[in-house]
Length: 592
Image 1: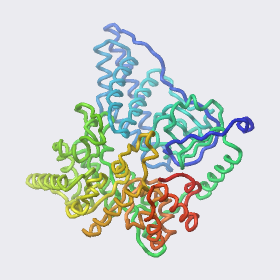
Image 2 (image 1 turned 90 degrees about the vertical axis):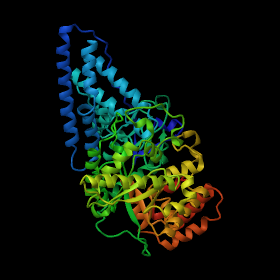
Image 3 (image 1 turned 120 degrees about the vertical axis):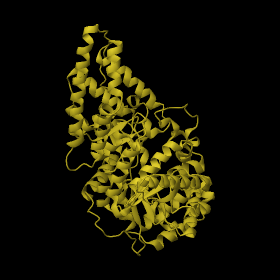
Image 4 (image 1 turned 180 degrees about the horizontal axis):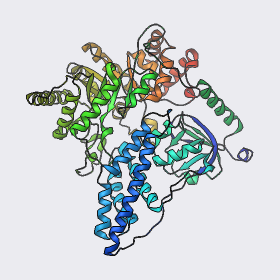
């Protein structure tokens, strides 16, 4: 700390992907990929090399089985599921067979064959337009590296030097997180890695504060630099002043003394004056609901069915989908689950077409489903079969008007008729629309008459309404959830749902942020669907406010003409009335 006092404090904005505060010295984790050369084999050497490769496969499978099943009682099922994906890459995909074919046909060493085949898969994965799927290239790299390690006979280990350190890396593979967690680092910083990457999921599972999205880390930070990682607001502070360190130590101490939240039990969540608010959870995995329910979630507000698509782009079969949908419906029970149909672009398919220039405005989501109807019909059949005696609903993503709803309902009816003609029983899931594009807002009253419920996807709604790419740092300041147009759009959708007497839930990031929740409740929202990590904070906030104050809050911001003005009015109100309900530091940062 003495050395840092002579250097100026500097702050870097980042993406907070794992909540917490980490304070420590920088230790760089450099790439572990080993160097090797192509070795041409004689005919009689090929069989021996294939045997060597199969031994490495068996060793890797054994390691992954252990990682997927032996992670302690305090972790949820995300860890098992992630390494289950790695097992599938080895056991179910064509990766291993293709490596064996390269060894046999090209007569080369196993290391070179792994590199050739893995590079082909990585090129395909990195060409996917959707960043959430692009990030999963790390899983392929991880499997390839594990096979290489098995061939070399020397498993990688986290260095003791990482204990209490802030580990800095360009990117981290999932298995690296497992190894690092054993050394108990203070925090992680990476250049790459979004909220939905397997690396970020594991960081959250192991409660390791993590920030990503800072470019040129090796130029900005030096080995041994004293840094603070703010995994709450998304900031990294280099050479912090003494008072800055003390401030963040106070936040960390407060969070640690709060400890694990008590189980929510069966008590319904309500504001002080009795307005009941339903908390749902957004999940990617069938097992994700069990823990969320202990925290107070009542129902799965959004199951992202595209999470079933393999890293290599293969869509799951009808039977595979049926099994997953039954599992998640069993987990949700009477609380219900809303299954969103595939919210993807054409580049996710194994049989590929050309890459679109502007995929966000292209052939994706419900548009793609209605273009590739064979795949859509498979998914609909799987849901209909799974819905027998289960509480399952269907959500159509990126609806722009009633025509997509009518076409989807026709397909639903047609597939039900076909199944019943062959003696296969079907359920009767409710049908809902995801409102996330301007045209859907403008025709919300018509859409509400055609569906059983509405879901408001605020992430994409803000993006499309304001013409701002939410993943583009260059226009980040224009992404404004509190823009007057966004507030009016939400109000319009709520009015449409009320007029049609159907429920509406908010499913985007706004629903999981305490800063926005009073606004949503004041506007009339009674269902909030969020990621599991947001449930406890939102429950605490909701149970400490009144509906009357939330309605008054909306009245106070009606005169605001900009997002900045709205944010200022909200912050003043919160500081005066509800300061004790917000996590330390949350009201200090921007929330436009």
